[in-house]
Amino acid sequence: MKSTLILTALWLIGAASKEMRMRSRPKSESNELNNMCDLKASDGKNIRCFCVQERYPVSTAECWIFGPIVDEHFMWRLIVSSQPFLTEFNLMTSNQTRFIPSHFFEHMLFLKNFSVSLALLERLEKFAFGNSTSLESLKLAKNQIEHLDQFSLSQLTRLKHLDLQKNRIRTIKRFVFFNTTELKYIRLNSNNIIKVEDKAFESMGNVLEMDLSDNYLCDINNLTFFGLSKLKVIDLSANRIIKLESSVFSEMWDVEELYLEDNHIEFISNRAFDGLRFLKTLSLGNNRLSRIPSGLLTSVFTLVNLDVSNNRLETLVFDSIEQFYNNLLRNGTIQLKAAIDPRNLTNSNPPLAKPTISNPK
Image 1 (cartoon, rainbow, N blue to C red):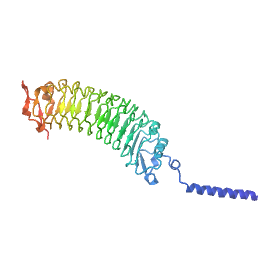
Image 2 (cartoon, rainbow, N blue to C red):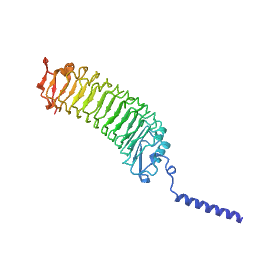
Image 3 (cartoon, one colour):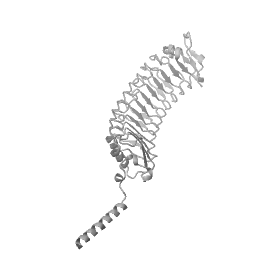
Image 4 (cartoon, rainbow, N blue to C red):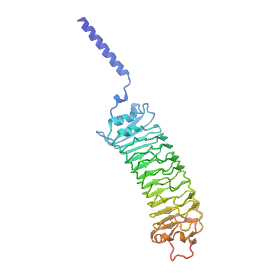
């Protein structure tokens, strides 16, 4: 009887001691939370998540990171384990997150739209997004990205929209976008891009619109745009391009809108726009052109909007616009502003009627 009482007392003491230890021990994150939707900044984790719907499974969620994360893998593991059926996930980081684990995308098999902004990513490493076969839209604007390693954005076989604007990217290397054949829209504007390696876009044969404006590009050639055979719109404005060599845009034979304003263009080869059979809008405003070469647009019959305003032109020879004159006469415009006197539209055989001249404010 005494031995039984002694054993019982010892058991009670041990149980009480164990309970005290459990209370004093900080709970692990995996035990403390089972759902990413329960993450609140007040929990001391500097993370707050919002889920569009409370019931399982959640399809759309957004997380904010307000400070350093002690365990940088914790949040990603919790998302994978609690909400693996997310189709849209947005991350706002307040300059805290320095990397995104590639294994996260390997487990998120239904994720279609992913965005992260205000992070300190600096570099996207090889296969940064785990060769995701579900991602369709990837927005990485405003993350201070400087380097895109080769294959960093490759094998994203369903990706259609890619936004890399307002980072610090300096070079677009070849094979960065390897096997992104479904990509339709890409934004690379407002970076520090000084060089695009030859054939860097060769795997992007279905891209329709590309924005490379507000960068530091100086030299471009026909291999710069190699593979962009279905491109409709390209914006190269606000760069530092000095000249346009022969057939520089020959790979983009379907392009309809070409924006080259606000560069330093002084020279254009009379064969620069060869092959642009569907070109409708050409903007060359705010450059340093002193002349438009005769025959420059000989192979372009669809042009209806031409902007050569704010250059150093004194005379525009009619021969240089003769082939698309009828289009301009019906519904097109030539934007000249004060850079050229419209009366100085000359030709050895003057036209019977003058094209429409617009002088926008």
